[in-house]
Length: 491
Image 1 (cartoon, rainbow, N blue to C red):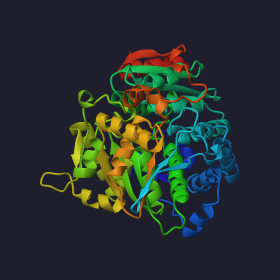
Image 2 (image 1 turned 120 degrees about the vertical axis):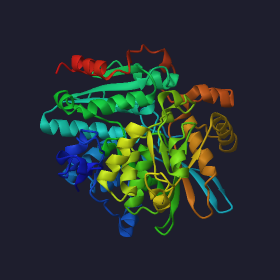
Image 3 (image 1 turned 90 degrees about the vertical axis):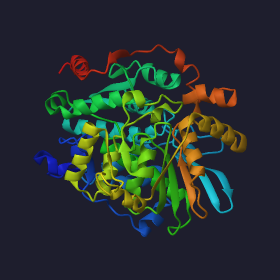
Image 4 (image 1 turned 180 degrees about the vertical axis):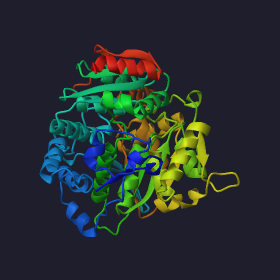
C-alpha cells in the first residue's frame, strides 16, 4: 500500500509514493496536500462474514493491515491488542461489557425505521477521539523506538482532540506535545482535562482567537519545511492519515453489529466540523462497506451543510465563526475536506491544488455548475452517499430533553446535533447509526440548562475543574509560536 498527496502534481518532492511508516509521524505532505492511498483496498463479502466474530482489537488489526503493509503483521497485531482493551475503554454503561468497546444502543425502532447510537466515548478522555488517539500514541512510540528518534507534536484542538492526544502521549518516550486551543472557548470540563495535566512533555497554549486561528498556525508551521525538519514536528490532528484510518474501524464495527447479513445497508449520521470523522466513513464506503448514506450534522457553523446543499464551499472569517454549545464543531475551515474533494474531482491533483489555493485567496470555491462557478462536480456528490443537516442551540436543548425522557440516556451537545439531523434523514428499512461524540459530563453547562441537573460523571472526574492548571496564553502569531516551540524543545 502506497500513499500520494492530494496535490501530488504540484511538487516533485511529493510525486514519489510513500509507505505508511513514511507518513505516520507527519501531517501535511511537503506540497501542502493530504495523504491518501493510491487506491482504496477492497473488502470482500467473505471477509465481512469472518469479521462478524472478531473482537474490536482483532477487527482493527484486519483493517489496519490493509493500509500499514510495511509494518510486520505480528507487530501490528500486538499494537492493536495493546490499544483496544477493556482496561483502556472502561466507561461502558450498566449492562454493557467494556470488552464491546463501541456498543450499540437502540433508540427508536418503529414503522421500519431504526435509530441507533454507537457509543464511542468509553476511552480515558470520554470522547470519540480516544478511539484513534490511543492507537496513534502506541504507533508513534513504536515507530520512534525503531528509529531511536524524537517527535514534537504540534496540534490544534477545539476541545476533544487536545485532551485525547495529551492523554495518549503523556509520558511517552521521545515525544513532546504542543497543543493549541482557543482561549476561553472550550467547556470548563474540556479546559480542565487538558490544562490540569502536569506531565513535563505536555505544553498547553491558549490562543487569543478561534479554532481556525489555531489550525492555521499548525498548517503554517507544517508548511515551513526547514523549521519542521529541525524541530522534528509531527501532528495528531485529523490531517494525520493514521488517525483517520484508525477511525475507519468503528464504521465496520457499527455496521457488523447492526446487521445480520451483508445484503443489508446502514446509514451513519456524524456530528462534523473538521470533516475527519465522516471522512473515515467515506473511506469505509469506498472500501466496499455497505453504507447507504453519510449524513454530516453541523451546528450553527454550517460550512459543510452549505456545501452539501448547494455545492458552494464558503469558509467563514474568524468574526463569522459562532461560539456555540457544541464547541468542538465551532470550525469554519474543514481541514480534512480536501481528501473528499480529491476523490470528487476524479483524483485530479492539479485541480485539487487550484481549488484549495482559491480557499486561501478567495475564501472558498463553487462546484454547483451554475454560470461563473468553478465546476459542476456537485452533481456527483450523491454518488458518494452524502447528505447533511444543521442544528441550533434550541435544537440541542430539545433533543437532549427528548432523549433523556424517552430513552433514559443523557447525551452530549454534539451527539444531540447528530440525533436531531439523523431523525430528519431516517428511511424505512435502513438502520441509521449516530456516532456518539462525547459523554455529557464534558458539556455540563448545557446539560444543566436542558435538564435542570448535572450530568453524571465517571469515577475520577468528579472535581476536575478544581485541579491546578498549567498553560500559557499567546496571540495568534506564527513567529512567536515558533520561538516558543524552539525554546521548549532545545533544538
